[in-house]
Length: 304
Ligand code: ADP
Ligand code: MG
Image (cartoon, rainbow, N blue to C red):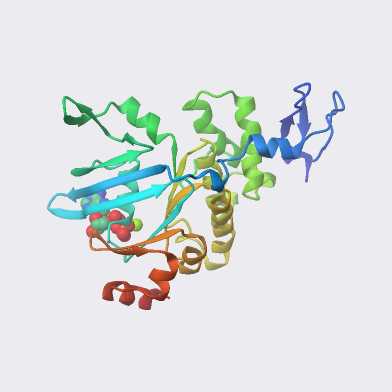
């Protein structure tokens, strides 16, 4: 690793900066304890702590764009630590459903709760009224969203992209955020690209930076919308690997994908949507090996 990329971590004993390749503090000589750092920056509690708490609960969601009904009575439950994969043909409403979950879209009917808290609305005298922007932003900040297009800021390095929101939205200290960002970039295999601008990164690398950027906000929930669809085929695997690792660590995830092998392997629950409704849902084995609905069978026939 060249010095250019040897970004500092802080000594747990004296606080001095330690270059990434060093395992001892140059200032006080204390060993740098990588495992305790990893423990401190663990993204979520282990999967065994999932204990069935509902992270997302959607009840009878209806969403219209003008006269077009895009979601029609969608119910969804995602428990803490669960990975729910949504599959379905283009135009079936998958992206809109994800956007409703973090209230990037207003819903026309139904309710969405994040950890038991209504998002977008609050109850007042038995009626639902629109929530304040500040409340919505507070809940939304706990939800990471990874898009098909990576949307990195082009004028910022990978590291700057990752630290931007924790500093400016969460008002965390630059030093602490930078330390954590380097751990996250390491996690997605890009610590050596920390000071590189997006245009010098491959699509797969940019998407991994985008994932690190979302994780830097310490989200309770990650939404992935076809995160690998814009990538050249040979770059898909490196992004799926990061997503798989997150799932194994117990991150709660809702994943829209056309990668059926990945879905089968990682999903706890698979939902097949078509034309604004959930047509069929169940375990990966049920959906992929024994789909009951004709529309599911036809869709899987076209994609597998
Ligand atoms: P998917 O992600 O499954 O391909 P989308 O949720 O993107 O589906 O879209 C569902 C339907 O809603 C499509 O018919 C799409 O054209 C329409 N749609 C999505 N966003 C908008 C919008 N902002 N305005 C009008 N129609 C939209
Ligand atoms: Mg979509």
